[in-house]
Amino acid sequence: MEFNIALLKGDGIGPEIVDGAVKVLEKTADKFGHKFSFTPYLIGGCAINKTGVPLPQSTIDGCLASDSVLLGAVGGPEWDELPGYKRPEKALLGIRSALGLYTNLRPAKLYPALRAASPLKDEIVGSGFDIMIVRELTGGIYFGDRGYREGRYGQEAYDTEAYSVTEIERIGKAAFEAAMKRSRRLCSIDKANVLESSRLWRKTMHSLAGKYPAVEYTDMFVDNAAMQLIRDPGQFDVIVTSNMFGDILSDEASQITGSIGMLASASLGETTRGMYEPIHGSAPDIAGKNIANPIATILSGAMMLRYSFGLSAEADAIENAVDKVLAAGYRTADIMGSSEGTPLGCTEMTEKIAEAL
Image (cartoon, rainbow, N blue to C red; front, side):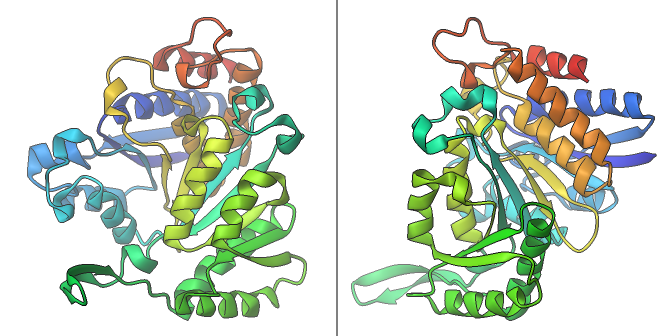
């Protein structure tokens, strides 16, 4: 089978980690008899430097013409003084919207080999955890009305949180379907005791729950959820929540796994075309030093094979290769303990995973 993949390497460590994922994908293609064609496009700060905008139309057109998209990271101090609408991060919202990607899947898994890296105590971690956070991606406060106005105490800024039944239903369906493929447990996170948008969210989710009687459904307020993730992460299987709450909770979940450098994500819409990216940032302080962890991007490539191309065996092969390499004791600097020897660089870790395939 042949697939066309758009590469958005971006800024900082983005080019290094995307190159690592490409190498593993190419090795997978060779092993299973597929062909992956890769086409790079500009996004973020590098796009600003070359075109004056963080998301050129040519990038949007190229992504729309592809079978799927692999993204590295954007941003850095070089562009910090730009106004908000010109900043590299604006490109992320733009490309998600242009591709119609409203569902974000963020797995948070504690690998047995990295148990010591988790900041949680052994009695809390137990046998480990494997959580899937389903975050709504194109609605809510990040896309609502915003601006400045005169208020009670002078000038004030405002951002508006708004959700429609349609937006809630479609992310809810994605979450219930994800739960059906796992252990059939779904927890919806909101703030229905305070926010009107959350009351509609909860009402709509309850209506959907009746269509999935096989799924054990619960609700939880976001402040309690933040505490419960630390107190007992193993209680969760699939979590569904709004854009802002999902942004915050998924980063919290990433930290209790031991390293943000291990976690992949998938952004999906109505078609099989998705965008896949690590959840960490561009880490400009280590860019070009060959010390970045490529695993999150490699695992994002595995998610692409699974969710966009329907290549489950190939995705399993990549994930198993990562497991093997970690179990063998190989580490990059961000996941290495103080007594574990010499860390591998980005290139060396990529090579180990490719070899394990």
